[in-house]
Image 1: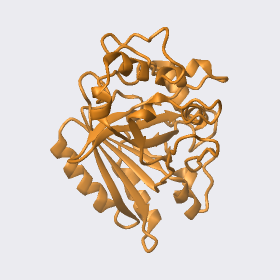
Image 2: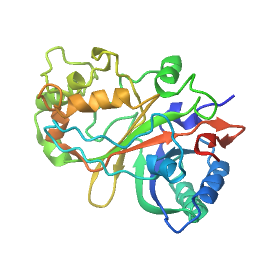
Image 3: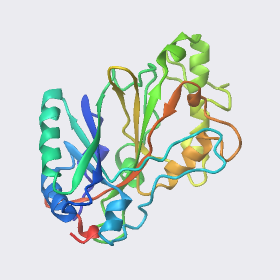
Length: 293
């Protein structure tokens, strides 16, 4: 029986790396994917495959599309796309560096590594703004129901879809605001994480109240802060059994449905956006039957 990649439903690790790859047009894509299937355990290394890979292999993964552009959006949310995404999870940054080298070399037959982002857990699971992240995340059976494909047949059951965005924060701007303004931007009090009853319509919590959508738009978020020598922000990662819930949330955030933009955009900017399909596990390996492998 196929199972989801365990890292999807596990708590976020203390350290992480996000690797993005593009297809090497002169390489051996099938060979690289077969090698990846045996390397990735789905827990320490979570794998997502882009729509372009399925296209090159002349296969259709039902539900796998490209990151959307909303014509009525009032703010820009880029769709940058990527062919392959690997989320390296662990507790030792040095070990992640060594695993990165292993993975890049393993995939060199068919992929080129384009970007590496270092992520980390802050405090008990906070964004760098200081606010708790993932407060309304589904847990246990509800998380499984939200994040994992079921009743879709062999090669698809146990798989998941993931939306990945890199956001760049202007922390100097946000943290210079009065505490009340910070709370109203998020829609929660930083001090105790309680939702503000009188939060403005633009507050992030109001814009993305998952239970207010029809159907409800719950996703399983596994986001983590990131930082380099010049910038910092959040790698937003949302798993679902389809992309429908994420798209409903994003459409409302950008004001495409009612003209109200999420207040998050007042201090943070998305610089990338990609969709991936996370294949299931079978007998300790990635099950790539949906790709004909």
